Image (tube, rainbow, N blue to C red; front, top):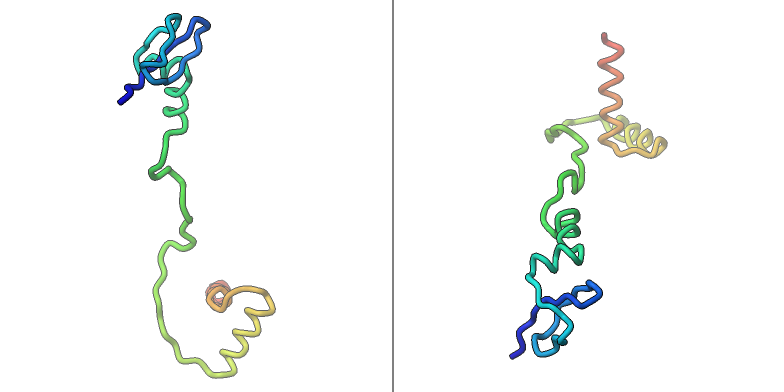
Length: 107
């Protein structure tokens, strides 16, 4: 079984290779030296790998929602659906707009 080592050649280049492939003009170095010279240490620190990242994922659209059930006249339901379709919004959004308009007009 071949043991892998990190080597530095006469020109300063570093590589990981099998111990039996090391040439006379190459120097065996530590893993830390290899990572420093090759830039691998900088890459790992800067970009990392895997795991959760701050700010990643789908953002919440609403602070909190509560499901309720209401009885409406059929004509009101039809009007709500038509309004939502005409303005290309969901029925929930249309209902929110209607409630907001009521509150603003009351104040």
